[in-house]
Length: 328
Length: 208
Image (tube, rainbow over all chains, first blue to last red; front, side):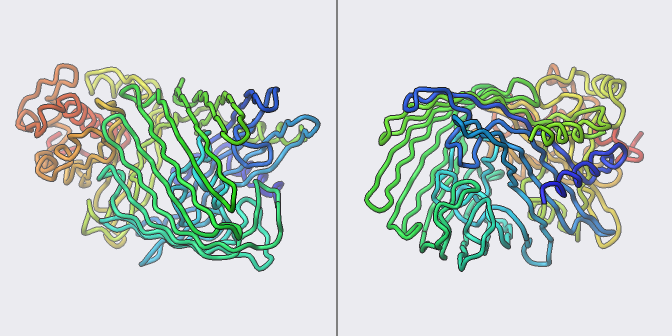
């Protein structure tokens, strides 16, 4: 499968073929290094060596529009990374697929098939795949991407989305597991500077972390959530709350992220994010801070700090993130 | 494993001689926005282009001369990708929607123009703008002041001094507290029109 992806990309990147004005191909590379006071050693990940989140990697982001005589009718998207896992004696490479979907425009909603964002919470529209700060889905309460089908429809007052996915996240397994989700939101962020969403999720999902299956037995999911984004002057506010049953346990979780842009081009940004959750009898609280600096149009530096109350870990992470559109 | 890294690197750079900057300007929700901005449309086609692709340094110099200012900052590198939406009514092309990024008071703003095939402004739309006065600059009354204007009108606007003549001079700032964003919007409009002309989407600008 992965060789197929690579060969596909090679075909796209060959001279001449990439000149078409209906596609974009980005090259992505990142370096991650940090220090954990809990482990008392350097680390090379932003969250966990098994999680799909930031690790040293190279990859690509490809987008192609399909058009007929009367306009666009479809979009194909593929995001792939080859990530390095360097954790003590565990040294290996991991193939990662984020977006891998085909989206078709219909007279009603858009319909997508493949690996895309489930219609639940902040992650349903807020792309974190290059960021260090985590949404609740990335923290483990849901899936940032999942395999399946979905619908989206934009209205003048907001958006409606629904999805039916495998409930596995990065890997695709079928063992009686599924996740159905729906989200309705009010406000158009790009016009109104706010968006408030209500989400519902129902199914039996699998406990996974990155590509690792922690428990192959599907566990009950019954979640409701509310999320909000609000932009004003140079401040960005994002909030997310969910409650119900997740992986068979009574759970609730919330986060609040405040960001401040420091210059007229949004080159420099500082963010703070407290996150609290309870699942079963376990509770935890994390405080995250992040400073971002866009050094050039292609290179971003991020410096992040995470304090975990339960483990008392202080994690410092430096990320160099390179994202360069490539065309002949 | 090493071979995968080498393989990826090889194919990424195979035959590529130029790179695009990463700060593009797309409609956030093209279906919704195209229908709203171009009510008579039945479809649209997305086209990606850039200064580096269309002519490189020579083209950039010409654009800067016409703008009366240098391109600078993240939003105006030679490799910034521009997204042009060709608007269709059935199978007939009836116009364009094109947006540009521009430095604003509290961060980047995105100014979209709705153009007919002659490059005459049919609509004006500020997408991203987080200023507390954004509502006034997004108000339809403000946007209507741009309707009917062309690049020829904006050639009389000095983006460095903010001085204008003719029809552009008549455009009133609805939010005096946001003078910086108002001037950014005018600069973005002139830049937008010049780019559309230089990219060849406007076959013959009216009055020229």
